[in-house]
Length: 88
Image (cartoon, rainbow, N blue to C red; front, side, top):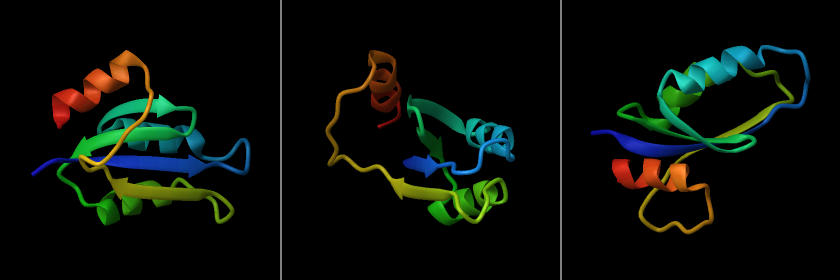
């Protein structure tokens, strides 16, 4: 069963493998909702997503992957709201 996951990150070393990170995130059904924040829709677990993305990060970078549930509120672009609604 597919779920929506929130992926937030801080990339602290410019010029590293970040294009690989973006490509890895965007290989999922994804929606970029903020500068350093994506949502992905997948049947993978948070651990599986982390394993795929972590190889693109340096030790001083940070990432958080968490399942998005029905208890959320925010103000996003309409396209992001539509993306969430379609997959919820």
